[in-house]
Picture 1: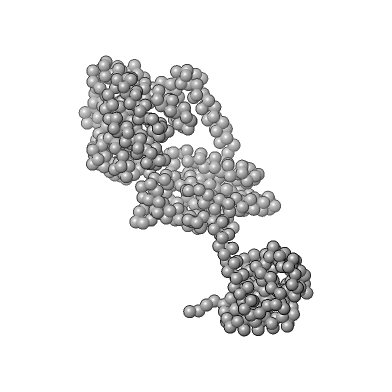
Picture 2: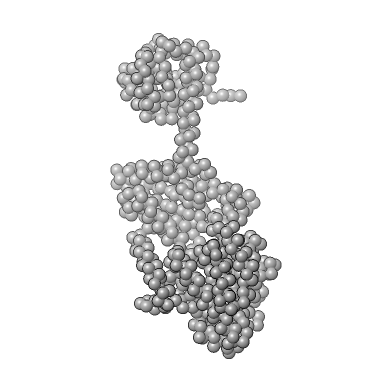
Length: 573
């Protein structure tokens, strides 16, 4: 087996000492050592540039270098090469200082022999390798091999300092994989890890050697792009990354489509310090993630994002008073059998009669509400009000209809949520089979085992359970096998795609067929055109709701609709 030689650079100006070292290495009988000699500091630096040096034997007293300054210069030029000092002086203080300046060992020429010299060299080489290994582990992510959070901050600090000196710009990109958790949960952590490794490799291929890519969290990556001349340079680099992410990842026979959200902040225009620059990139990334109508999105930071955050805080303050002031109200939208036109249920939809801004729909306040603990109090009010209304309709309309109530993730995860539902049913007199709780798909991803426990408790109460907005996220039939759902509600966009593309129709058909296999109803929301309704009928969808049938109605108008009869025809034209 061919073993690569170990190139030893001897920096020594005394011919006698050069001969001594040569003889000691030869006496050791190890031909793996290949000795190169330099008699001056200047020539040693040239040889370090031209040769692959494994270790250095260094005399501190040279014609153009003296003492520890010589060691400092050599070490600075070859940070990763172990150095063993050869000295004429048995000076313990000098020996300690040499190690502090970067030497691996300190030998006295008059007391060295072949065995001691070779052992010192081998130990120095091995210690240096171990140092490099430990240093790599301390600064790199063990899964992907990318820089870790600590190394990222060091690199960013240095890159900002360099940009400041050169009066140039850099871009900081923060990238988050959308819906990574359901891949981990449904396909296993091993597949998730392989996907992260694949993402890391593609990111490496997208950046230059002078740039840095790091993994700073579970599915969060960051990139430092230096030498940016303008915002357009950052756009070009970002589009290259997004294009690379659009190709499916082949992992263990699975073809995985991954989408990303990227936030970008620029130095020095967005911030002149490290912490603020990172925070601004994070703000921009969450703004990109909020673009729910875009699969892959990037956003540059802007000061208006902070204004928006301030607006949201004000909105949460106003929401905290809305319930006490009875500003919330509920509208109801019919759910209709697509074959017969019979009204099978009513979905309760929250509205906010704002004292200054008028009637607000959920899209204008629901994110702020669901990010606040207030959602628990408002959610309980909605549930009680809807159950009370359903019981009234049973008495006045002559025939019961299913009452559908949307849940937020935070509601579902309440410790006593099932007990609260049972108490409200008993209080309002509504039989459990006439209450349907719509559970958003993402609530199952956040804590699957906890969600399963809560959904199972609700199922034991006898209420109906629907998986809401199916197809909005990373739809998985795994949840249909595991959770005791009674219905699947197709997302609005899936309903629209079903009537415009063959792929959309195939996906909607698959969802409805799977629902029927598991003895669940297939329901569609957002039906707005006759073409959409015709397609849903062809796909054997069970129920539908949307503007084609009826806009959401206040309770009085909904009551009149039910009293006129329980069949509803789609609107003409």
